[in-house]
Structures are given as C-alpha cells and as structure tokens.
Length: 298
Image (cartoon, rainbow, N blue to C red; front, side):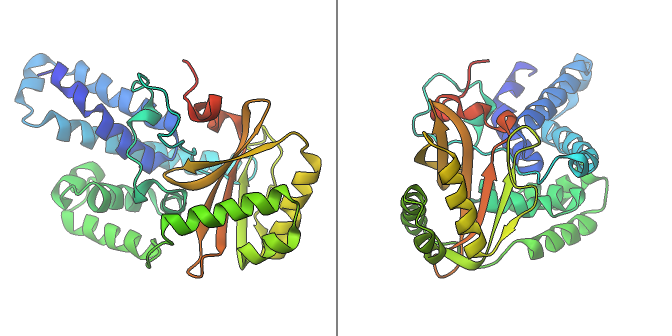
C-alpha cells in the first residue's frame, strides 16, 4: 500500500498550491506529508483505510502552519506579495511531469484573481474553503484538518465564500481581446488608448520582492496606470511582449533576450475593461517561466 500513495501527489500539489500560492512551499508541504507517511510503522500504515485522505489531512495541517508563519514573513516582504504565476500548457515540453507546475489543474480556482482573494482570508477560512468548496471534501474531513467541529468549519467556509466576488467573470475570449489591445497600446506608448482600456478605478499591484524594480505600492486609477506603463515602455528598449496564459487566463509576458522578466495577469470589470493588473517581477517566482513557459531544468 505504501507505494500506492505516490499517485496522490498531483491532488496534494493542487491543494497546497491553492492554499500557499507558492510552488516551492507547496512542494515542500507535500514532501513533508509523504515523509510523515513513510515514517509510520508498516502496521500503522496498513490500518489506514484511505491513505489519500490521510495525506490530504496531513498536507492541510502543514499548510495551515505555513500560512500562520507566512503572514509574518509577508509583512517583512519588500513591497506587495503576490502568488507565483503559472504558465499555461502551451509550449510546455513533454516529459516534465515531475515539475510541480506541471501537476496543476488550471481552473477558475487557480486564477490570480481567486488566489489573491484567498490571501485575504484567515488561514482557517482558506483551508476550509479550498478543501470543501474547491475539492469537495466533506466538513467532517475538514474538521480533522482544522481540529474544529464540522459546524465550525461550515461557518468558516461560509465566511470565506462571502469574500469571493460573486458575478461571472468576463468570458475568456473577451479577456484575450482586451489583453491583446493592452499589449498593442503599450507597445505604441499610446496613453489615450490605454486609458480607454482601463477601468477608471483600476488597480495595478507589482511584486518585485526587493529583487527586481517594481512599484512598492499599488498604482491606482486608469490614467495613473496608463502613464506608469508608458513610462516603463520608454525605459525598456528591446523588451518583447508576448500574449501568454497566466494561471489559466489570458495574460502578458515581457521578455528580453529570451529571458522572462515580467509576467502580468489581468482581471476584467463587468464592462470588459481592465479592473486589476498583477505584475510579478520577482525572479524567484519566474523560474518556471524559463524558456517562455518551459520549466527550468532542476
């Protein structure tokens, strides 16, 4: 039975990445869960009716602990902290399934907009919400992870649900067209066109982690963002903009001399204009984008 648990890794990585927003931390959490499994005496492992459920419970508890300490670490982080951006499947070479990014199912629960909302929840809320609402674990099992009653876990998930924006997102086709127009306006340094594409109350948040230049505070308002983007275009000769899926939705990648320097994710308002832009420039979060979306060799 011991070796049969290896097949659970994909599910565990998917749970851990959604909770932690970090590929490295998700992989560490899953490795730790497996280490605890293999540390059990064989007789104890044989008694466990569902190794997958056991591993999920342990992974959830590890993520809960990591989330608690992550709050303090992120307060010391230089500028805004954003989740690791994920490349789409396009251009991903075959035979890389060992990479955690290749294990991830790209659905609406992994968009940057969704992950950023998860970050606003308490650790217990996010664990209850992700396990129950996203992965359909019953509250009786969630209770085992959080060491609370099923009723308390149900309350946590309900509280988390209220934080998640209601209303259908703009269709992917509409987002792709908007992102393409943003790219063209940015390349042309056309501030008026950018302003037209941005919601007046749009917000741009950048994550450089102190390792790459990025605005330390969110840039608010369509006109301010448009001028900021045009200014970057002026200072960045040789930068190549590419339309690429980011966490499963249309986004942009900025590359110079073949190296990905920036990944941008977008969220649209109801009228189809850009409401949020998340810009990830921290090179530690872009390693999986080496070679434009191909995971870097380990």
